[in-house]
Length: 141
Length: 393
Image (cartoon, rainbow over all chains, first blue to last red; front, top):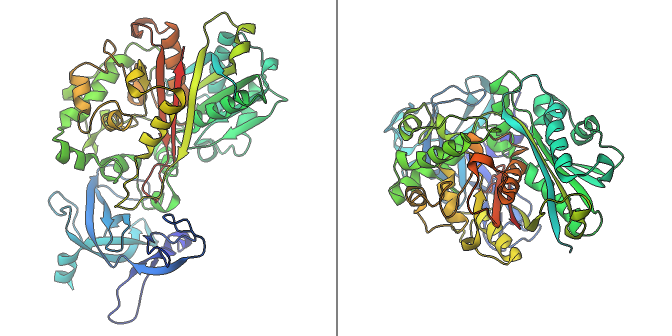
């Protein structure tokens, strides 16, 4: 079963050359960008000025941690991170499965790239947005 | 607005009480508060019941307050169910305070109750995670991870910025475990050493097991009354609610320069009470993870940025210090039955301010004290609810 709530937060683009993105909102009055989508701008508090924005194709690792106790539906150890998007928001995210979990693998400030994949092996039908180091994904492709 | 006093408090011990449903946990807390206040169930004109996880964990939806209070003989009055994550009990107190301050009621009851031990800790942890906005919870963001790396607290970054060590992060837990060892209602009563805290199992770096509050059942209650009518019920000195502040988190972007929301709540509370942080004699604060206490020191205006560990090193916030913090043992030692915590803090401060705290009594007896309680997590990078309550005698 696809998780409808979560999948509204990103777009998997299947056209060649296109990469997936997160879906946020941009205020056409004050240019504030938020994630996820909102109908009211939290900065200028106007209603009806928010337009869908494709964001977060890349980002910068803001902070990261290895969780040694897994939340329900996940396997430990796993990376949990915040990524700062060039458009503004900082988002909580998981790290793509192509990236091995261990100390020294991630470094705050490093460039990251968005990937869409199952949220965990226990929930193969639920897609989630994750980030991987930009260099590594380029090496692997 | 009328002056409002707390005239009675009561608490159930915090810990593991697998066999007790919510109403059995709440009953002794409620009746201890009523007895303490000299108030009969029929004197109560309104009641607020805080609870956070009962819907998910017990399956009882919608009417938990009425179920809990009917079991304790309280019926036929407005009963308001309050759900506000880990700040549910502070929110319940605010409701009761507002009823009396506004003149709608003369006597009101606030209850906080939580049952977290249901024989399946994975289910409990998942229910707790659901106090975060669902998009976050479904990606497995736990409160431990949140304290470690969330932009609003980011202990890993604070360690770099301030030069805090793992031993610094453990200091609040050492102090609070000493306090908790003197509290018969505390969940964990063994004093901990800095070494065993630092060396306990890593949950989420840099948080170790003994820096984290644990799964807990418990309950607390307070009877509030208009100050001018307190003497009708009790000869004990009333403890006045000087301010009772609640606010929601803000949607914050990285360049947000507004004050932290815990700071905003506390300073509004100081202003409404006509005091400053330097006037406090005791504080109970929301150390869901022990190192959060270090951050809250600065956010509540108790020290400059980065100086949290020094308040403990210099014995300022220990029981014998100038400003004891978490004399009850705090969330990590006394316990954190989440929907009861805000009122467990109030119970402790009232006992301290009446000189009834036994071996952990603060001397001289505090005249002014603050309870700080917060809960939940939003996608907008703030907690969901922030409460600050100032008591004076």
